[in-house]
Length: 453
Ligand code: PMP
Image (cartoon, rainbow, N blue to C red; front, side):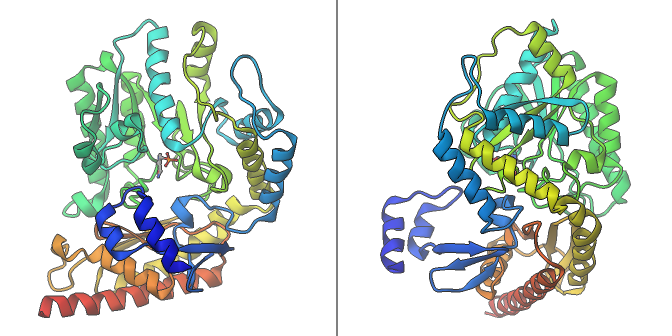
C-alpha cells in the first residue's frame, strides 16, 4: 500500500517548494495520522512534530471539538458567501472575536483563504487607502530581504526570498526590500544592538531614496519565520517604529506565524509593542485544521475605506467560509479557555529557552536562540567556526537525520528551526531537545566522514 501510494505520488503529484525530479527519485514520506504533538508515518514511526505542521497546528492534532464544530457547521450551512450584502453567523462571530483579541485599535477584519491572499489584500488596501487620502503617489511598499509573505505573485513580491524572485519573473511593481535584522547571519562582527539600529537606519535611507511622499507602507514579520526564526535585536523594532512615524508610513505586521500564541502573546505585535495599521493572519487561526486567513485592519485605514471608499473591488469565494470560520472560532475559544497563550508566555516559552540554550554547547552549534515556542540553531563547522561549505548541505542532512530519529526539525540553509504545537508539555520539550542533540551528533559524524572522504 505504502509503495503503491508513493508510486502514484511520484506519477501525479507536484509538491509545493519541491525539486520534483529529486523527490521522484527519493520518494515521499507518507504521513497517515497524528495525535497531540506526534505524527505517524506509514511504517508506524511516531515522530514529534517540532514544526506544528507548517507553524500552524497550535492546538495540536486530534482535537475532537474542532471536528465537531466542522461537522455541525457543514450540516447547518456548508457554504455561503459574504459578497452582495449577505453574511452568516460563523463569519460574524469570528470577526467579533478576532477584534476583541486584537490590540485595541484594530476593529475590523477582511477574511481570506490563506496567508498569501491576506498579503495580496494588504497590498491592495494600502494603495487604496492612500489614494482615498488624496495621495495616490504614495504607492511604494518596502519589505525585507529574506522576509516571507506568501507564494502568490503579490505575496512573493512583498517577500524578499531571492530564489522565488529569480523564478517568478518580474514581480508586482512598486515593491522594494531593505536588509533584514539577522544578527548571526549578517552582523556577527558587531554589537547586536548597534546592528539592529543600523538595519532600521537602512529603512530610513531607502525611504529617503524613494522619496517619503511615495512610500505607502513597510511590511515585516515580528520574528522572521521561513527566513530562519530570526529574532531581531531589541533595538530594532523601536527604531523602525520611530522611522515610520517620522515619515507617516503605514506599518503592516505579518502575523501569519507569530499570531495566536507563538511568541507567548496573542500577537507578535503585542510582544514587541508594534501597534500596526494592518495585520495579516492565517495558520494558527484555525490551528491549520481548515484553511482560513484574513487581515485585521486598524481604525485609521478602516475609517477611510469605509467612509470614503465606495465599493472595494476585492474578495475571494472562500472569504469567511462558514465551516472554516466555525472551526477557527472554536479554536480561539479553546485556546482562551485552556489558557494556551498564557502558558506559552509564563511556562513553556521560558522552559524551552532554558533547555534549547543547552544545545549551544554542541560543537556544531554557533548559536541557539528561541522566543516563545520558536527556536533556531545555527550550524557551523567546528574546525573554523564559520558556515559549512554550501555543497555539504549540512542543514538538509541534519533535517533528514532528525526525522529518522523521530523529530521534525526544518532546515533553512544551515539554520535548524522548531516551532512545536503550543500544547507541548515540558516533558515533551525535554524529548525534543534530546532528539535534536542526537540529530546534531549524527550530523557531526556524517559531516566528519564526508570531509575525510
Ligand atoms: N506570511 C507568513 C509570515 C508566512 O509564514 C506564510 C506561510 N508560511 C505566509 C504569509 C503565506 O501563508 P499561506 O501559505 O497560507 O499562503
